[in-house]
Image 1: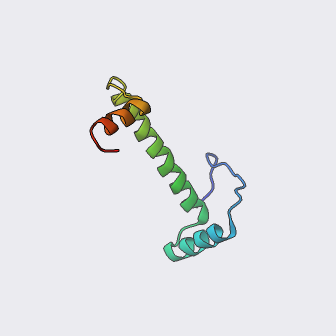
Image 2: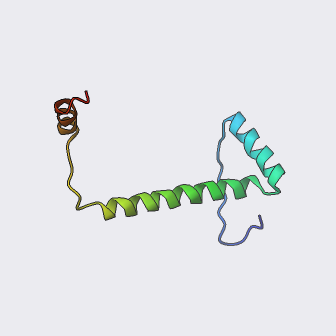
Image 3: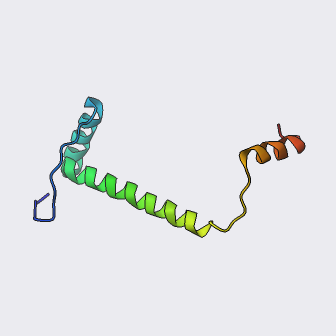
Length: 79
């Protein structure tokens, strides 16, 4: 990865096994550990964004409490 003005540096502490796995994957894919970590973080943030969008889409759906769900399951012979 070529550093430019838009890149920030940070220290991250990994468990030894995770760090080793990252180093092996980086070497086997001709990428840097930084590239792998950046990709993983971007994917996690993208998933969060998708989850939030799904919540927004379902905001008007009826809800049921956990207690009501259990009562319904019991009444239907599922519990």
